[in-house]
Length: 275
Image (tube, rainbow, N blue to C red; front, top):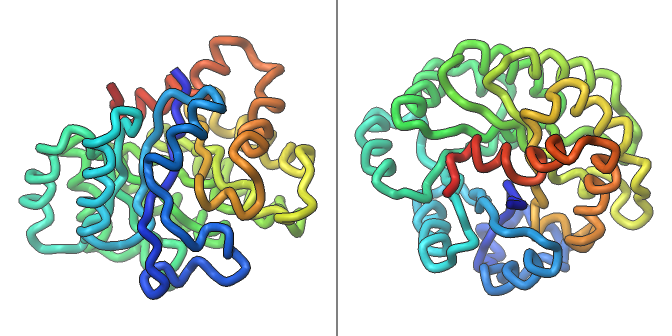
């Protein structure tokens, strides 16, 4: 089974979705399951995990509605206020939704020191009681803080989104690579190979631009902790789905069939407890 472990749905709202800048005109519109399903079929993908793009309870409800109405949406990574006093009770309610697999906070948009907050750490710690996962969304400058954060939470299962968004367009790798390797030392962290094309030169990238970054990630995490993700529809600003998927397909062609099977789907099924 091939699983896209990272994509988004939205009904475009100019004010709420202000992060979609004018240069991203291509994705300033609605993207729903009916738009994604034929794309997945055309690219040999069997199912997907829908990830929050807005930090609201309404977003989680919206994604769950899409998942309940579409069998190919196998799981949802929603948003919840992880610093709320009544978090445990709310997680208990959330655990009744079979397709709700975990949560994410857009830490990349938070000030320095956010991951050090005791109330946030306490909130993420509670996810383990309900077998919920946590998606780490950070920039390279936040990787060191991510290591300190995750190290305090050995019972929570983490996955790093978009290989932490290295500055591929500038060819910067050294500091990011050092911090990636350190984070990967923690056994409860996996990594999504996703979102790379949007960190490259949108109009002039080549497959080989990504090779040193993929080398680093594969060396650090190994084939047992790497998940394929598209970051559709965000990826469309730089590449069509097939071209984006081909970057990883070309790279993993040298691996064994068993390793490829894990990366394309088995690891996502295991990490998110998908049916």
